[in-house]
Length: 411
Image (tube, rainbow, N blue to C red):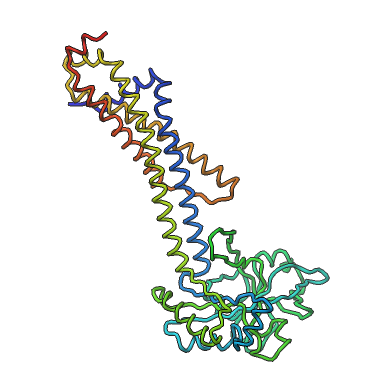
C-alpha cells in the first residue's frame, strides 16, 4: 500500500532541500496562474458591470431616443414631414403593439435652476407617472409625480438624492425651486442610486441622483407652444414579457418609421440585445483567455518536467537503493508524481496571490472593475495540479522502470 501522507512528507522534504531549484522550476506556473487569475478577475468584473448597468436600464424595456440633428438634417426632416418623437408615437405604440405594458415619454428641459440667489447645474427632466414604475425608482421621502399633476400641469418637482443634498432643502423653511423664474414646489426625494461610468457601448444610464423631475406639460419650455406641439427626447417602452422584447423592438421601429415618414431621426436601444452581445463578447474573451492560459501552463509544465528529469538522473542510485530494500515500482512512481504536483501547487498558490494583487492594482490605478470569484481560484489551482501531474508523469514512469542493479552501479 502507498502511504500518501508519507509520500507528501518526503516530497516536501526533498523540495526543501532544493529550494532554489524548486523555486525556479515553479516560476512558469506562478506567472501562468497569476495571469489567469488577473484576467479572470477583470473579465468577471466587466461582466458584473455589464449586468448592473443593463439592469439599471431595465431588461424588459425598449428606449427610443431622438437624434440630435444638424440644421441640414432638420430641414430634410421637415421636408419628410417628420414631427420627431411626439404624442402620436406614444399613442401608436400603446394601441398597435401587443404586449406593451407602459410607455413613458421623457423630455430634457434646458432650464436654469435657482434656489434663492444661487443657480445650480442639475438636469431637469419632464416625465410621466409611469417613469417611476418602469425604472423601479424608490422614494426617500414624499411622493412621486402622479396623473393628477400631469392633468392639472401642476408646478411640482421630485429631486434626486444628490440634488436634494446640494440644494440644502432639508433645512430650508420654504421648499421651492425656481426653474426659468417659475416656482416649483418640492413633493418628493428619490433614494440614492449607484451609477458609475461605463465603457460598454450603447449603455449610458442617466445619473438620477443629479436630476430634477417635473410633470410633462408643466415644464418651463411648455409655455413656448400650444399643448401637444412639443417633442420628446426619448420614449421608454416596457414590455409585459421579456421574451417579446426583441420582437417588440422591431414593431416599435416599424411604427415610428411609419409615423416619421421613413425619416431615420431616432435611435432604438434594447438593453436585452446589449446583454446578449455582452455575453457573446464574454465567451470570446474566455476562449482567448483559455488559449493564453493553456500556452502559459504548457511552458510552466515543460519547466517542471525538465527539473524532474534532472532529478531522476541525480537520484538514480537512491532509486536503486529503495528498490533493493523492497520499494515497489508504485512507490517510486508516487514519489516523483507527488513532488511534481507539489511544485505545481506551490507555484499555483504563489501565482494566486500575485494575480489577486495584480487585479487589485489594476482596479486601483486603471479604474477597471475586477472580481475574484471562488470558481476562478479553484479553476486556477486545479489547472496547476493537473499540470503538475502531467509534467511529472513521464519522469516518474522513467524512474520506476529503472533496473535496480544498473541503478546501484551508478556513482
